[in-house]
Image (cartoon, helix red, strand yellow):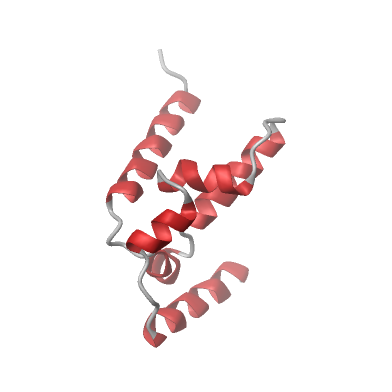
Amino acid sequence: MPSSSDIEAAVFRRLVAHLQKRTDVQNIDLMGTGGFCRNCFAKWYKEAADEIGVTLDADEARELIYGMPYDDYKAKHQTPASDEQLARMDASIRLNKA
């Protein structure tokens, strides 16, 4: 019988695959509505690796989440942020600190 950790890992893999597929969804929009983005996932992934003694640098973690090197992803999929997107992100960041 799968453990809750097995299920959580499967859900995480599915979420990462979904975010890799949905390149039309910008990180700034994720930040503005949910308070997290692909970079947050990469940071959390690296922190979790550090906690269990697995050596992983930030670029490696980003590549795992983005499915390609971060600079390649930005060049292919990232668009300039609008003033509205930046304002939503700033408001969301304030909520995360609360």
